Length: 243
Image 1 (cartoon, rainbow, N blue to C red):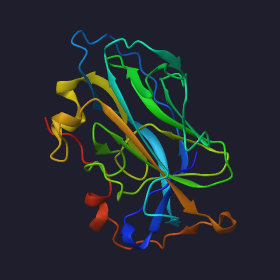
Image 2 (image 1 turned 90 degrees about the vertical axis):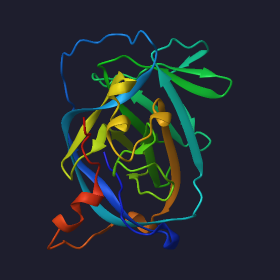
Image 3 (image 1 turned 90 degrees about the horizontal axis):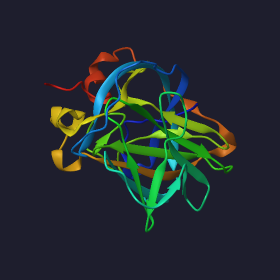
């Protein structure tokens, strides 16, 4: 599974890519309950091992080639049940995985996709590339960027989705080696309600933006080692919640 990340100005279309070098699924036996009010959020969950490295990439355009917003709650939705929603005219498939890596059922209503969540259940964002193109995936949960924990923006940086490959995003990135699992919770316990970057008005929505990347001969230029990495650490990844 390979991914992308950068901290460079998007105006010059230059990106630093995060490539996942290994990860392990978290398993737990927490009690799963339905939220009686129907109002759900995503909590800062258990730490999961997930390694990344940075490589240099460029976008082909300032504009995303596709954007999707998926609302979720504890309510049962009516509509067509699907397991994978197609992006970029079928070139990319997006799904949600549970703790056992099974696809979470989605409901499609008038071209809108919705998800019924369960309090205490962790989930993962799953993307499959059905094409020979290389893409950048920018994902937000409750309005927060999954990499840096800041307000979601198309100018933020994302993960690489390589040709005919898959990408699994398991949580908010805490470091180069760990993420905090996405875990459904009561909306009052959502990470977005316990960080300065979050907003209660954005709880209950998951967004994905797709950019195509320039990928000459599929060569990835690694970023030079940093002798003082701690100087940038605080601004790179998501900060833990404050209760």
